[in-house]
Image 1 (cartoon, rainbow, N blue to C red):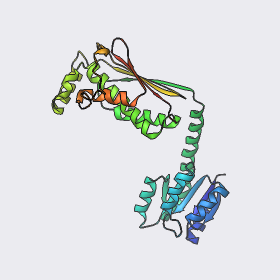
Image 2 (cartoon, one colour):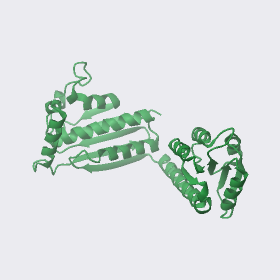
Image 3 (cartoon, rainbow, N blue to C red):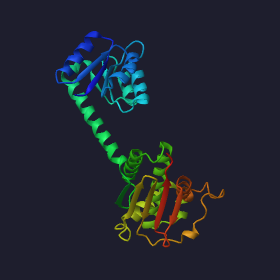
Length: 294
């Protein structure tokens, strides 16, 4: 059975938590503060840590912070007494996996520990599976709306985090570049809105986008996003169903005279954040590549 490390300066609370967990078969190691717990982790190799919040030496919040850095794969559950709820919120924000009120130990402790262990085990299995991945491809078919793009970009960034191609800063940059590419494909590709119109007031421009999206000439068009992730690079190909354009006619968005222009902002970010950027001859397909940095 899994091992639970209980950290609490109250002998009675340690005894109660130990009894509830041992009754269902868990192995339990109990210590009285966070400082001792840090030393004990290396010895007992717990599967989960259950900690009180208010303790001498090293309190629960400090223990969560240390565990997140030194032992990030070991989840921490905090026990909250009346009056310590705000500290528990801070602990959750800094990496704690869950919490259980002390007044509910008899009803909620075992199920909370089991749920956290189940999620942790699933993450480890996913990590093992992704470590064996050599190529992952997906295709997304999108309508002419910006609604839902944030969720899609969030999902793509999570994939990049899982396969550990890039650091967090580069993941954010890649997400921005893909978002800008999709916006360009929808607005300038499918809806055939010229770049010059991007310089109109924001309210006017948004109304134009909405009108075009509802126009029968454009509303059945889609944007196709293909992602290819390998162990060395991430490739994103965005294709729209518009008439295209001459890629050679694009002004250099990195030129000093163009950097401040609204209508060149998307391409400026794309070319800045990605290692390789190219269009097909028709101009309705954009390929962006970012190579491994870790």
